[in-house]
Image (tube, rainbow, N blue to C red; front, side, top):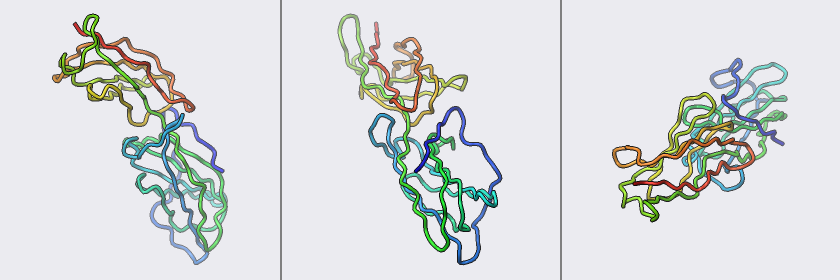
Length: 227
């Protein structure tokens, strides 16, 4: 059974890496991995929508200490490792975003038997993202549509701890949206309403969002005010 890993501000630590294909005798074997993605709190998601293009399998032989790493496109949803000597391995299966940052991973110890393929337990990577179920625009006391006030984009300006800000943009006329994958941690989130030239029509005060690994990061409904 896999043990869930916690991903904070950075990915996994690196170690000595065995590169290239391992070539050995006929007793060698391989691991087979399979995976899917789901949001914490429920709901499946594709690799493309999550912006997680890569799955990486790290296998460390407990006897020799040699570390092997294989990777596959996330949307393959399965992969077979290089051939390896039989033995006991510390195994880590990690999901990476487009910046090569580990956003979710599981780890455990498995025995790899001679002259055969060992299926690892299937993994559902739990991922986080900001979810805005609804936004609206008021002009005076009246509710108006985006096109009536020239609003084109709703932007979330987000900052994780002391990191650089990251913006997420949604078409205003969609009136709801969700971001690609985010890490766990304390965020500052400021919603903005922009016109076609990206001028700010309205912006709300930044809110603090404590993104956890057990509950979807859902923002409250947003009401923009325009003159």
